[in-house]
Amino acid sequence: MISVIIPVFNKAPFLERCLDSIVNQTDQSAQIILVDDGSTDGSPEILDRYSKDYGFEVYHNKHKGVSAARNFGLKKVKGDYLTFLDADDAYTEDAIDVMTRMTRHEFNIVQFGQYRHHAKGVRKDPIIKGNYPPYRLPARWAMVWNKLFKKSLIDDLGLKFIEGMQFGEDETFSAQAILANNGLYQAPQTLIHHHFDDKESLCRGELSVKRLEILTDTLLRLAEKEPNPAKAEWYRAKVRQHRDSALYKRFGCQREITGNYDIVYFVKNCKEDEELRYSLRSVEANFPYRDVWFYGGKPTGLEPDHYVEIEQLEATKWERVRNMLRRACLNDEITENFWLFNDDFFILKPFVENSKPTYNGDLYRHIVRIENRHDERSTRWTTRLRHLTKTLEKAKVGTLNYAVHKPILINREKALEVLDKFPDEPMFRALYGNYWHIGGTNEPDHKVQLIEYDMDRVDKWKTVSTDDKSFEVGDVGKYIKDKFNMKSRFER
Image (cartoon, helix red, strand yellow):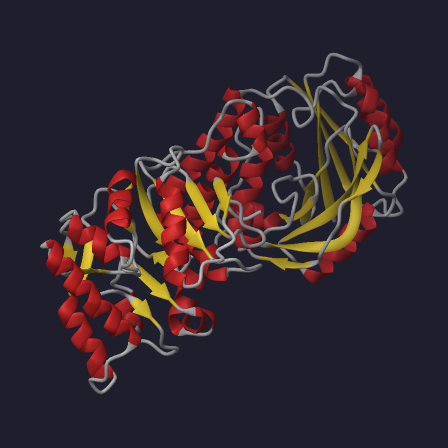
């Protein structure tokens, strides 16, 4: 049996529409639980009339809010599955029949589609059916009135609505259930008529900074209590997405700023960039920052805080990089110091903002290692490096090899001086680090280009970089995809 819980507070103008949609169901087997939350507008009399005529269960309580009303309804559930319906919405005539048939598949959570009724017409939400994991949920995942829950799941979790919340109480309920179930099933059927004619409804009416902040604070508390690190990060990612949303910005709520410096990514012009997508996820999880800038391209589905389009028509990669770097350093909107990233950087462990810079030994030793791999034959790369060492020696600044596959903190003014002083040298990081004597820690440059790799080593690193192949099909790529399986706020 399906149990339907309907909380009611002063919904007299819309209540008959809701209840008639239940009276007209093709399947009349559901338990209908109507919880009057202290209504004063004639709703109690309507509820009593339908209870008398159709046998619906009606309970009249003191006004305590929608969460308390739903929690009361949960105590009265007799069915193996339960669902919620708002008193200003309605069902399609076959909704109960479809939900009852869906229980035969024994899903723990099933989500259905909705018709959205606006003043200008009716719109049916598009649906792609299938199983959705927590990091790739369908639209409208946060609502409870479009879902069917297995009662045993709710009972085992001891799950209740958080009383006192005036906005987002359904999101916190759904989130806990979805994470415990590791996802939900999106059914192809559209069963709910969701109406937008009730101006008193919170999702259509007035919001406030306080109400929005209560939701994000609640999600953060759930993150603190969650023992599973990936699920805790899921909650934190939702908070970041909320605080960066148009709704929150409209009411003055801003996303959480975690660091003092911006991140500047140099992004190649392409339609898709999965490495960049996962790099951003690793940043969200482990790296403190203010804003993220893309210089160059903006792959489909990714939205940074700021984007500067650059066509990248220069003859060589190094010329393109120097052009983007100069443009970034001349941009007064970027923080005076900023982190320089490539789109194949991944931050594997929490990163302290004042961490020392890292270099990969001495340039001469680096050249010898490369030449040994090439039977001591000089390559275009080592020829460039030897030219660089002579330039550095002439400037009397040292020859440390600053890793090109790790983040580096750049000062805009100092970077411009290096670009102007060494216009013919492509190796900016080594030039910058040595010229300004930034020092740091001697660590290997963790660039992985092999398909099969010793993962015990990777698990000890704080950062890693990949190439296309090692990311797409390699051991390290799989490790990164498994580790950062939650969407970042940059994914639209």
